[in-house]
Image (tube, rainbow, N blue to C red; front, side, top):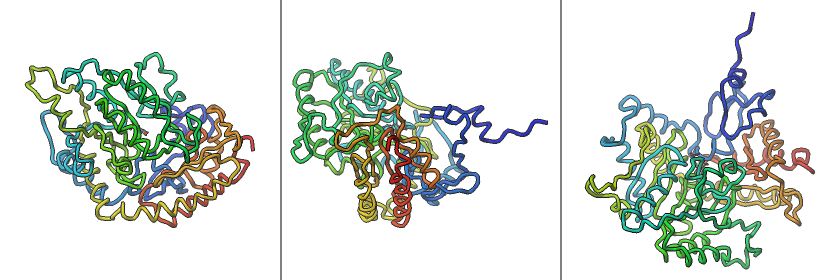
Length: 453
Ligand SMILES: Cc1ncc(COP(=O)(O)O)c(C=O)c1O
Protein backbone atom coordinates (compact mmCIF):
# COMPACT_ATOMS: atom_id res chain seq x y z
CA UNK A 1 0.00 0.00 0.00
CA UNK A 2 1.50 3.36 -0.98
CA UNK A 3 1.73 5.99 1.76
CA UNK A 4 0.18 9.46 1.45
CA UNK A 5 2.79 11.92 0.09
CA UNK A 6 3.99 14.52 2.56
CA UNK A 7 3.79 18.25 1.81
CA UNK A 8 7.55 18.21 1.22
CA UNK A 9 7.12 15.49 -1.37
CA UNK A 10 4.25 17.32 -3.03
CA UNK A 11 6.33 20.50 -3.07
CA UNK A 12 9.12 18.63 -4.87
CA UNK A 13 6.60 17.18 -7.26
CA UNK A 14 4.52 20.25 -8.14
CA UNK A 15 6.29 23.50 -7.28
CA UNK A 16 8.95 25.59 -8.95
CA UNK A 17 10.29 28.23 -6.55
CA UNK A 18 11.51 31.73 -7.51
CA UNK A 19 15.25 32.50 -7.49
CA UNK A 20 15.87 28.88 -6.48
CA UNK A 21 17.99 26.09 -7.95
CA UNK A 22 15.46 23.31 -7.44
CA UNK A 23 18.15 20.64 -7.38
CA UNK A 24 19.26 22.00 -4.01
CA UNK A 25 16.08 20.49 -2.62
CA UNK A 26 16.22 17.13 -4.36
CA UNK A 27 17.30 15.53 -1.10
CA UNK A 28 17.12 18.41 1.36
CA UNK A 29 13.80 19.59 2.77
CA UNK A 30 12.97 23.21 2.24
CA UNK A 31 11.77 25.31 5.11
CA UNK A 32 8.03 24.77 5.29
CA UNK A 33 6.50 27.72 7.10
CA UNK A 34 3.26 27.15 8.89
CA UNK A 35 2.59 30.47 10.62
CA UNK A 36 4.20 33.79 11.48
CA UNK A 37 3.91 36.37 14.22
CA UNK A 38 5.90 39.57 14.72
CA UNK A 39 9.47 38.95 13.52
CA UNK A 40 9.17 35.19 13.81
CA UNK A 41 8.35 32.47 11.31
CA UNK A 42 7.36 29.01 12.60
CA UNK A 43 7.84 25.77 10.74
CA UNK A 44 5.53 22.78 10.88
CA UNK A 45 7.33 21.36 13.89
CA UNK A 46 6.91 24.66 15.73
CA UNK A 47 10.58 25.68 15.47
CA UNK A 48 10.92 29.46 15.15
CA UNK A 49 13.14 31.48 12.82
CA UNK A 50 13.82 35.21 12.94
CA UNK A 51 12.67 36.72 9.67
CA UNK A 52 15.83 38.80 9.29
CA UNK A 53 15.00 39.79 5.73
CA UNK A 54 11.39 40.85 6.36
CA UNK A 55 10.20 38.17 3.92
CA UNK A 56 11.90 39.70 0.89
CA UNK A 57 12.01 43.21 2.37
CA UNK A 58 8.28 43.80 2.66
CA UNK A 59 7.16 43.13 6.26
CA UNK A 60 7.12 46.46 8.11
CA UNK A 61 5.19 46.15 11.38
CA UNK A 62 5.83 42.44 11.90
CA UNK A 63 3.80 39.53 10.58
CA UNK A 64 0.07 39.41 11.21
CA UNK A 65 -0.23 42.83 12.80
CA UNK A 66 -3.74 42.88 14.29
CA UNK A 67 -4.70 46.34 12.94
CA UNK A 68 -3.87 45.40 9.37
CA UNK A 69 -5.38 41.93 9.69
CA UNK A 70 -8.62 43.45 10.95
CA UNK A 71 -8.71 46.01 8.11
CA UNK A 72 -8.38 43.24 5.55
CA UNK A 73 -11.02 41.13 7.26
CA UNK A 74 -13.61 43.90 7.36
CA UNK A 75 -12.83 44.94 3.78
CA UNK A 76 -13.35 41.36 2.65
CA UNK A 77 -16.86 41.38 4.07
CA UNK A 78 -17.65 44.53 2.07
CA UNK A 79 -15.89 44.53 -1.31
CA UNK A 80 -13.36 41.97 -2.47
CA UNK A 81 -12.28 43.08 -5.92
CA UNK A 82 -13.40 45.51 -8.57
CA UNK A 83 -11.66 46.75 -11.69
CA UNK A 84 -10.22 50.24 -11.47
CA UNK A 85 -11.00 51.25 -15.06
CA UNK A 86 -14.13 53.39 -15.09
CA UNK A 87 -14.94 52.40 -11.49
CA UNK A 88 -13.38 53.37 -8.21
CA UNK A 89 -13.69 52.58 -4.53
CA UNK A 90 -13.13 54.25 -1.22
CA UNK A 91 -9.90 52.45 -0.29
CA UNK A 92 -8.11 53.31 -3.54
CA UNK A 93 -9.17 56.95 -3.24
CA UNK A 94 -8.28 57.43 0.42
CA UNK A 95 -4.96 55.66 0.01
CA UNK A 96 -4.04 57.82 -2.99
CA UNK A 97 -4.86 60.91 -0.93
CA UNK A 98 -2.60 59.73 1.89
CA UNK A 99 0.28 58.78 -0.39
CA UNK A 100 0.17 62.18 -2.05
CA UNK A 101 0.24 63.80 1.38
CA UNK A 102 3.29 61.78 2.43
CA UNK A 103 5.30 62.11 -0.79
CA UNK A 104 7.16 65.24 -1.97
CA UNK A 105 4.74 68.04 -2.87
CA UNK A 106 5.46 67.72 -6.57
CA UNK A 107 3.93 64.25 -6.74
CA UNK A 108 0.18 64.58 -6.98
CA UNK A 109 -1.11 61.54 -8.89
CA UNK A 110 -1.14 57.85 -8.01
CA UNK A 111 -1.28 54.99 -10.52
CA UNK A 112 -1.75 51.55 -8.95
CA UNK A 113 -0.41 48.16 -9.94
CA UNK A 114 0.51 45.04 -8.01
CA UNK A 115 4.26 44.53 -7.71
CA UNK A 116 7.55 46.37 -7.69
CA UNK A 117 8.47 45.48 -11.26
CA UNK A 118 5.23 46.92 -12.61
CA UNK A 119 5.59 50.05 -10.48
CA UNK A 120 8.89 50.74 -12.29
CA UNK A 121 7.75 49.52 -15.70
CA UNK A 122 4.84 51.98 -15.49
CA UNK A 123 7.14 54.90 -14.71
CA UNK A 124 9.30 54.02 -17.72
CA UNK A 125 6.31 53.74 -20.05
CA UNK A 126 4.68 56.92 -18.73
CA UNK A 127 7.86 58.88 -19.25
CA UNK A 128 8.25 57.69 -22.82
CA UNK A 129 4.63 58.31 -23.75
CA UNK A 130 4.69 61.71 -22.06
CA UNK A 131 7.59 62.94 -24.19
CA UNK A 132 5.84 61.71 -27.36
CA UNK A 133 2.73 63.61 -26.43
CA UNK A 134 4.41 66.89 -25.63
CA UNK A 135 6.19 67.03 -28.97
CA UNK A 136 9.53 65.49 -28.01
CA UNK A 137 9.29 61.98 -29.52
CA UNK A 138 13.06 61.81 -29.88
CA UNK A 139 13.42 61.63 -26.12
CA UNK A 140 13.31 57.88 -26.00
CA UNK A 141 16.64 56.83 -24.48
CA UNK A 142 16.84 55.61 -20.92
CA UNK A 143 19.55 55.47 -18.27
CA UNK A 144 20.08 52.92 -15.49
CA UNK A 145 22.97 52.00 -13.22
CA UNK A 146 25.29 49.05 -13.02
CA UNK A 147 24.22 46.93 -10.02
CA UNK A 148 20.75 48.54 -10.24
CA UNK A 149 17.73 46.29 -9.89
CA UNK A 150 14.16 47.25 -10.71
CA UNK A 151 12.44 43.92 -11.27
CA UNK A 152 12.23 40.95 -13.58
CA UNK A 153 10.04 42.18 -16.44
CA UNK A 154 11.70 42.79 -19.80
CA UNK A 155 11.58 46.58 -19.38
CA UNK A 156 12.96 46.67 -15.86
CA UNK A 157 15.64 44.09 -16.69
CA UNK A 158 16.67 46.27 -19.63
CA UNK A 159 17.48 49.04 -17.15
CA UNK A 160 18.92 46.77 -14.50
CA UNK A 161 22.57 46.01 -13.95
CA UNK A 162 22.84 42.64 -12.25
CA UNK A 163 24.26 40.32 -14.90
CA UNK A 164 23.97 37.27 -12.64
CA UNK A 165 20.18 37.62 -12.80
CA UNK A 166 19.55 39.07 -16.21
CA UNK A 167 22.36 37.68 -18.36
CA UNK A 168 20.34 34.87 -19.97
CA UNK A 169 17.79 37.35 -21.30
CA UNK A 170 20.31 39.69 -22.91
CA UNK A 171 19.01 39.09 -26.46
CA UNK A 172 15.58 40.36 -25.42
CA UNK A 173 16.64 43.49 -23.58
CA UNK A 174 16.46 46.89 -25.23
CA UNK A 175 19.61 49.04 -25.33
CA UNK A 176 19.98 51.69 -22.66
CA UNK A 177 22.76 53.74 -21.07
CA UNK A 178 24.44 52.44 -17.94
CA UNK A 179 26.25 54.49 -15.30
CA UNK A 180 28.81 52.89 -13.07
CA UNK A 181 27.54 52.01 -9.61
CA UNK A 182 28.38 54.41 -6.75
CA UNK A 183 30.06 51.45 -5.09
CA UNK A 184 32.23 53.28 -2.57
CA UNK A 185 34.01 50.15 -1.26
CA UNK A 186 35.11 49.42 -4.83
CA UNK A 187 35.12 52.99 -6.10
CA UNK A 188 34.75 53.01 -9.91
CA UNK A 189 37.20 55.93 -10.19
CA UNK A 190 39.62 54.66 -7.56
CA UNK A 191 38.98 57.32 -4.88
CA UNK A 192 38.59 57.02 -1.14
CA UNK A 193 35.38 58.25 0.46
CA UNK A 194 37.16 61.10 2.27
CA UNK A 195 38.37 62.57 -1.02
CA UNK A 196 35.24 61.78 -2.98
CA UNK A 197 33.35 64.54 -4.69
CA UNK A 198 31.17 62.09 -6.63
CA UNK A 199 33.64 62.04 -9.50
CA UNK A 200 31.94 58.89 -10.69
CA UNK A 201 29.16 61.17 -12.03
CA UNK A 202 31.48 62.65 -14.66
CA UNK A 203 30.39 60.12 -17.34
CA UNK A 204 26.78 61.17 -16.72
CA UNK A 205 27.72 64.81 -17.29
CA UNK A 206 29.39 63.78 -20.56
CA UNK A 207 26.45 61.64 -21.65
CA UNK A 208 24.03 64.49 -20.97
CA UNK A 209 26.16 66.99 -22.86
CA UNK A 210 26.06 64.69 -25.86
CA UNK A 211 22.62 63.10 -25.70
CA UNK A 212 20.68 65.06 -23.06
CA UNK A 213 17.86 66.13 -25.39
CA UNK A 214 17.28 62.51 -26.41
CA UNK A 215 17.07 61.04 -22.94
CA UNK A 216 13.63 60.44 -21.45
CA UNK A 217 14.44 59.25 -17.94
CA UNK A 218 16.98 57.91 -15.50
CA UNK A 219 16.00 55.30 -12.91
CA UNK A 220 17.79 54.78 -9.60
CA UNK A 221 17.28 53.21 -6.18
CA UNK A 222 17.84 56.07 -3.69
CA UNK A 223 20.66 55.57 -1.14
CA UNK A 224 21.03 51.81 -1.56
CA UNK A 225 21.29 49.48 -4.52
CA UNK A 226 19.67 46.61 -2.72
CA UNK A 227 19.52 43.47 -4.87
CA UNK A 228 22.74 44.52 -6.61
CA UNK A 229 24.66 43.86 -3.38
CA UNK A 230 23.38 46.23 -0.68
CA UNK A 231 25.53 49.03 -2.04
CA UNK A 232 24.96 52.06 0.18
CA UNK A 233 25.97 55.44 -1.20
CA UNK A 234 25.89 59.02 0.09
CA UNK A 235 22.90 61.34 -0.26
CA UNK A 236 25.10 63.93 -1.96
CA UNK A 237 25.50 61.57 -4.93
CA UNK A 238 21.74 61.66 -5.40
CA UNK A 239 21.68 65.45 -5.04
CA UNK A 240 24.39 65.90 -7.66
CA UNK A 241 22.83 63.42 -10.02
CA UNK A 242 19.44 65.12 -9.73
CA UNK A 243 20.96 68.56 -10.34
CA UNK A 244 22.76 67.29 -13.43
CA UNK A 245 19.78 65.68 -15.09
CA UNK A 246 17.45 68.58 -14.25
CA UNK A 247 19.59 70.82 -16.45
CA UNK A 248 18.59 68.67 -19.39
CA UNK A 249 14.93 68.16 -18.43
CA UNK A 250 15.42 64.42 -18.05
CA UNK A 251 12.83 62.66 -15.85
CA UNK A 252 14.08 61.25 -12.58
CA UNK A 253 12.54 57.95 -11.49
CA UNK A 254 13.12 56.92 -7.88
CA UNK A 255 12.60 53.23 -7.32
CA UNK A 256 11.69 53.09 -3.63
CA UNK A 257 10.12 49.67 -3.95
CA UNK A 258 12.60 48.35 -1.37
CA UNK A 259 13.51 51.51 0.55
CA UNK A 260 10.03 52.96 0.96
CA UNK A 261 8.15 52.89 4.25
CA UNK A 262 10.83 53.48 6.81
CA UNK A 263 13.52 50.92 6.09
CA UNK A 264 16.31 53.47 5.66
CA UNK A 265 15.34 55.48 8.75
CA UNK A 266 13.10 57.99 6.97
CA UNK A 267 9.68 57.18 5.52
CA UNK A 268 11.18 57.50 2.04
CA UNK A 269 14.92 57.40 1.38
CA UNK A 270 14.61 60.50 -0.83
CA UNK A 271 13.95 62.60 2.30
CA UNK A 272 17.60 62.14 3.33
CA UNK A 273 18.73 63.77 0.08
CA UNK A 274 15.93 66.33 -0.13
CA UNK A 275 15.35 65.47 -3.78
CA UNK A 276 11.90 65.18 -5.39
CA UNK A 277 11.71 62.86 -8.42
CA UNK A 278 9.25 62.95 -11.33
CA UNK A 279 8.19 59.39 -10.54
CA UNK A 280 8.21 57.52 -7.25
CA UNK A 281 7.77 53.75 -7.41
CA UNK A 282 6.42 52.00 -4.31
CA UNK A 283 5.47 48.43 -3.45
CA UNK A 284 6.66 45.81 -0.88
CA UNK A 285 6.12 47.78 2.38
CA UNK A 286 3.16 49.70 1.00
CA UNK A 287 0.71 47.22 2.55
CA UNK A 288 2.98 46.59 5.53
CA UNK A 289 4.02 43.58 3.45
CA UNK A 290 0.73 41.76 3.90
CA UNK A 291 -0.72 41.86 0.39
CA UNK A 292 0.65 42.59 -3.07
CA UNK A 293 0.23 46.17 -4.21
CA UNK A 294 2.24 48.87 -5.94
CA UNK A 295 1.89 52.55 -6.71
CA UNK A 296 3.64 54.84 -9.17
CA UNK A 297 3.37 58.46 -8.13
CA UNK A 298 3.92 61.26 -10.58
CA UNK A 299 3.47 64.99 -11.07
CA UNK A 300 0.54 67.03 -12.31
CA UNK A 301 2.66 68.13 -15.26
CA UNK A 302 3.09 64.56 -16.44
CA UNK A 303 -0.55 63.73 -15.76
CA UNK A 304 -1.57 66.70 -17.90
CA UNK A 305 0.48 65.36 -20.80
CA UNK A 306 -2.07 62.52 -21.06
CA UNK A 307 -5.24 64.56 -20.34
CA UNK A 308 -7.19 65.22 -23.53
CA UNK A 309 -10.14 64.13 -25.67
CA UNK A 310 -10.20 60.36 -26.14
CA UNK A 311 -9.75 60.90 -29.88
CA UNK A 312 -6.41 62.63 -29.32
CA UNK A 313 -4.97 59.17 -28.58
CA UNK A 314 -3.23 60.16 -25.37
CA UNK A 315 -4.74 57.58 -23.03
CA UNK A 316 -2.25 55.60 -20.96
CA UNK A 317 -3.18 52.10 -22.08
CA UNK A 318 -1.72 50.19 -19.19
CA UNK A 319 -3.46 48.37 -16.35
CA UNK A 320 -3.56 45.19 -14.33
CA UNK A 321 -6.50 43.08 -13.22
CA UNK A 322 -5.75 43.74 -9.57
CA UNK A 323 -4.67 47.40 -9.85
CA UNK A 324 -5.82 49.11 -6.66
CA UNK A 325 -7.35 45.90 -5.26
CA UNK A 326 -9.65 46.81 -2.33
CA UNK A 327 -8.13 44.27 0.08
CA UNK A 328 -4.61 45.50 -0.64
CA UNK A 329 -5.75 49.12 -0.32
CA UNK A 330 -7.31 48.29 3.06
CA UNK A 331 -4.02 46.69 4.16
CA UNK A 332 -2.07 49.76 3.02
CA UNK A 333 -4.41 52.10 4.88
CA UNK A 334 -4.05 49.83 7.91
CA UNK A 335 -0.27 50.01 7.66
CA UNK A 336 -0.32 53.81 7.51
CA UNK A 337 -2.62 53.82 10.52
CA UNK A 338 -0.09 51.70 12.43
CA UNK A 339 2.68 54.12 11.45
CA UNK A 340 0.72 56.92 13.04
CA UNK A 341 -0.75 55.07 16.08
CA UNK A 342 2.52 53.41 17.06
CA UNK A 343 4.68 56.40 16.12
CA UNK A 344 6.85 53.92 14.25
CA UNK A 345 9.20 56.47 12.71
CA UNK A 346 9.82 58.21 16.05
CA UNK A 347 10.89 54.88 17.55
CA UNK A 348 13.41 54.12 14.83
CA UNK A 349 16.50 56.18 15.78
CA UNK A 350 16.99 54.21 19.01
CA UNK A 351 16.62 50.89 17.19
CA UNK A 352 18.96 51.96 14.41
CA UNK A 353 21.73 53.09 16.73
CA UNK A 354 21.35 49.90 18.77
CA UNK A 355 21.55 47.75 15.65
CA UNK A 356 24.56 49.66 14.34
CA UNK A 357 26.36 49.34 17.67
CA UNK A 358 25.66 45.60 17.83
CA UNK A 359 26.95 45.12 14.29
CA UNK A 360 30.22 46.97 14.74
CA UNK A 361 32.20 43.95 15.93
CA UNK A 362 31.50 42.15 12.66
CA UNK A 363 33.87 44.60 10.94
CA UNK A 364 36.79 42.95 12.78
CA UNK A 365 36.19 39.53 11.27
CA UNK A 366 38.99 38.87 8.78
CA UNK A 367 36.54 37.82 6.07
CA UNK A 368 34.36 40.92 6.37
CA UNK A 369 35.71 43.39 3.81
CA UNK A 370 33.07 46.04 4.30
CA UNK A 371 30.32 46.63 6.83
CA UNK A 372 27.59 48.90 5.44
CA UNK A 373 24.72 50.26 7.49
CA UNK A 374 21.67 52.34 6.62
CA UNK A 375 18.61 52.53 8.83
CA UNK A 376 17.32 49.06 9.62
CA UNK A 377 19.67 47.53 7.04
CA UNK A 378 23.10 46.10 7.92
CA UNK A 379 25.18 44.41 5.26
CA UNK A 380 28.57 42.76 5.20
CA UNK A 381 30.56 42.11 2.07
CA UNK A 382 32.69 39.00 2.48
CA UNK A 383 36.07 38.91 0.77
CA UNK A 384 38.84 36.37 0.36
CA UNK A 385 41.44 38.91 1.42
CA UNK A 386 40.87 42.24 3.13
CA UNK A 387 44.03 43.82 1.78
CA UNK A 388 43.35 43.09 -1.87
CA UNK A 389 39.53 43.02 -1.49
CA UNK A 390 39.63 39.82 -3.56
CA UNK A 391 36.00 38.98 -4.24
CA UNK A 392 34.22 35.65 -4.19
CA UNK A 393 32.84 34.67 -7.55
CA UNK A 394 29.03 34.52 -7.59
CA UNK A 395 29.22 30.83 -8.46
CA UNK A 396 31.42 30.04 -5.47
CA UNK A 397 28.25 30.51 -3.46
CA UNK A 398 29.88 31.66 -0.27
CA UNK A 399 26.43 32.43 1.16
CA UNK A 400 25.05 28.89 1.03
CA UNK A 401 26.79 27.39 4.11
CA UNK A 402 25.95 30.62 5.95
CA UNK A 403 22.30 30.27 5.03
CA UNK A 404 22.29 26.65 6.29
CA UNK A 405 24.11 27.57 9.51
CA UNK A 406 21.58 30.40 9.98
CA UNK A 407 18.71 27.92 9.87
CA UNK A 408 20.43 25.86 12.58
CA UNK A 409 20.55 29.03 14.68
CA UNK A 410 16.87 29.84 14.05
CA UNK A 411 17.62 32.64 11.60
CA UNK A 412 16.29 33.05 8.11
CA UNK A 413 19.25 34.75 6.42
CA UNK A 414 19.28 34.98 2.66
CA UNK A 415 22.73 36.05 1.49
CA UNK A 416 23.00 37.88 -1.82
CA UNK A 417 26.07 36.23 -3.29
CA UNK A 418 28.95 37.40 -1.07
CA UNK A 419 26.81 39.90 0.87
CA UNK A 420 25.24 38.82 4.14
CA UNK A 421 22.64 41.22 5.43
CA UNK A 422 19.93 41.95 7.94
CA UNK A 423 16.88 43.83 6.66
CA UNK A 424 14.78 44.00 9.78
CA UNK A 425 11.09 44.78 10.25
CA UNK A 426 10.63 48.21 11.86
CA UNK A 427 8.71 46.56 14.70
CA UNK A 428 11.75 44.61 15.94
CA UNK A 429 12.50 45.28 19.62
CA UNK A 430 15.91 46.05 21.14
CA UNK A 431 15.90 42.62 22.79
CA UNK A 432 15.15 40.98 19.45
CA UNK A 433 17.97 42.96 17.83
CA UNK A 434 20.29 41.56 20.54
CA UNK A 435 19.12 38.03 19.87
CA UNK A 436 19.33 38.33 16.07
CA UNK A 437 22.77 39.92 16.05
CA UNK A 438 24.11 37.40 18.60
CA UNK A 439 22.86 34.45 16.54
CA UNK A 440 24.24 36.07 13.37
CA UNK A 441 27.57 36.38 15.18
CA UNK A 442 27.49 32.67 16.04
CA UNK A 443 27.11 31.94 12.33
CA UNK A 444 29.53 34.47 10.89
CA UNK A 445 32.35 34.28 13.41
CA UNK A 446 32.76 30.54 12.83
CA UNK A 447 35.37 29.99 10.08
CA UNK A 448 33.80 26.61 9.31
CA UNK A 449 30.89 28.52 7.74
CA UNK A 450 33.10 30.68 5.54
CA UNK A 451 34.39 29.19 2.30
CA UNK A 452 38.18 29.06 2.10
CA UNK A 453 38.88 30.03 5.73
C1 LIG B 1 14.40 48.24 -5.75
C2 LIG B 1 13.49 47.19 -6.30
N1 LIG B 1 12.72 47.48 -7.37
C3 LIG B 1 11.87 46.61 -7.88
C4 LIG B 1 11.77 45.33 -7.36
C5 LIG B 1 10.83 44.35 -7.96
O1 LIG B 1 9.74 44.12 -7.12
P1 LIG B 1 8.85 42.81 -7.30
O2 LIG B 1 9.70 41.67 -6.88
O3 LIG B 1 7.69 43.05 -6.41
O4 LIG B 1 8.46 42.75 -8.73
C6 LIG B 1 12.55 44.98 -6.25
C7 LIG B 1 12.47 43.63 -5.69
O5 LIG B 1 13.25 43.21 -4.89
C8 LIG B 1 13.45 45.93 -5.72
O6 LIG B 1 14.24 45.65 -4.69
